[in-house]
Picture (cartoon, rainbow, N blue to C red):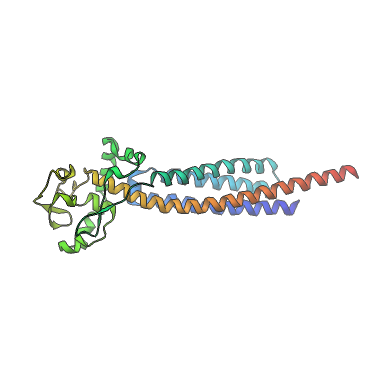
Length: 269
């Protein structure tokens, strides 16, 4: 029986370790410039990771200090958390399944359209109240200013592989026909009616295209890339956590069976 309890304790300790990549994923998202401005996914991930850590710790204590009710709490609570983690993994996949950039002639970077993304993501940036807060946060970053230090010539800039935020927020849409002066300063548009964003572009370095739908689309494209990476980590952790949980259930069931058989033998003798 003691050996079985020790095995359960080791299994719960592994479950504690598996909370680390979940918490780490949330912290990584929180440190990314775009996610730190939007603040949607990182806190649910961090909170879920912390809850898994606490529940696994409870199971670990219950196993080594022979506290049956803590083990039962671990089995029930961990099952709920695994289901929540699975729902989160599926949710991230579903909201990021749509949305990708499209090429423009003679450009290496991609352009982004807001309508290409899922409705749930679009709602996070559509309202003026939400976007004003996000825009103010983005404008304080160096994401656009860095372009002026990296690209002096127009052709070098056109051949650059920009991030979605740089493409959507730091320059006007290509179809407007603006003339390049530097990466964040453009003049003489040819076709201002091609897109509503053509008239929203500003050479004010605090404005640029932060009022553009292309900027919202670029932000969502950036989120999609980072959320997909996070989803892969969460999926791998989910599979490992499920295996550990099933091993814990099996060990706990065997331990209870041995205890019942031992009590039966003692009563018989």
